[in-house]
Image (tube, rainbow, N blue to C red; front, side, top):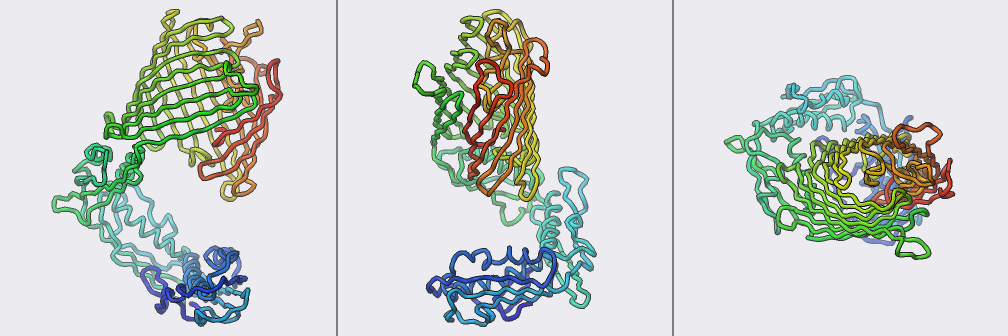
Length: 617
């Protein structure tokens, strides 16, 4: 397989070469040893890329090795890495030669003198392509009729006669064979033997995998360790694992997600006992490490229309030992030059969350807030609160609902008015996006329904909204993404003059129709003023393209309109378009957009610049 003896390499449990320690070579420290690599593969197709991607010499070429010893240790490791890469492509009879300064690396002593820089030549003859002749899984699980326990058959991954004999396919077949048993309650299923025989005369591979499913298991008790301020019994309950229920790996994964949602653990690990008890129960140990009890954060947003916004929060974790959270938020916005504090917006609020109120997936949420906000179309001073429940149905579906109360004073085209409102709020979200901050595929749907009663005028009403977003990635690593958003809303109730303006619909701003002021798009009252409307329709389309790994550009167009009693015509549609740049970080993209209103009206700006974190939607 190689041009000279190399260190031991193990694949499929078989040692392919004589054992030789690299520790001595790596222990010899010398001056930095620069080198230049060339790669030659005697084959067509993508094998050269496969070899290059497997080679540490290629990956680290820009950095000098740690002397001759470090370079030779890297080369000897490359023998193994390249052989494994060839196996993964179905080539079992290849020859790998790595020559350093014209000599085979495996034959050189660690203290050899090398030129500066030294030429390194990787020459690979991959040999013939092998295919599977016969594949067999002994004790393969009978396919489950329960859709929740269904596992794709190994044949779906290329594990079949005539398929290319990739080593990774054998490993996938093993994983699927084990998963099929585990989904049916056999927690300790193991691979007993793996026989892989390559016939170089026929360029074929025979594979026999033997599985021992072991005994069927049910969940046993969960012992919690590592808690400091947390209640161990509450932590155990939050896993949702019930003693006596059939073992299911999906339930274990769900238990881990429930623990992560508590936001109180730096680490939480469920570990099964070594064996299933005589009673058929499999006990677990849950080892946790708690996070500090408090954290805080700050943030900022900016647009040329709405000015600078500064915000901060303080979060207390685990107030009473059951992961209760109290978060206080404060915000000052609409900061512009020249400084005029009378035009500032203020907000202060607190949110208390009690996880696991009825089930491990149900949280109690109570919030109070006070704010003073000056919008382009009205000014609001309000205090309010709400209390309700939030429930996680699955990874994609969440819902919430509860009671709300508000006391408001508004100044708008109808004058100064006071409102007292009580009502219900409800919402559901379906989210299948691959990334919540920078999605490249998936769908997002959100719907709300909020009936209310206003006491000052004695009116009932209801507001409903629906929003959909979708994403389509193209090219290598989804470097180009098309993103679309559509939102609609409707309000049922009395005359506009008797509805609190914050219940009416407005459009405009960074998350709506860019190029226009926040909540500046509404209904013309015929007297030069703007009110909110009963109907809302918005749409956005973005094309996002990465120029480099960290820099991207965006082109977008937004549109929206608000209507009083009937949907308006196309002439009333407000459209904004623009360009943006993105700087991608580990926390998400930093966003800067410039937008122009395409059918501006008196009072609308010439352009608007928006800066923030995350994509626009």
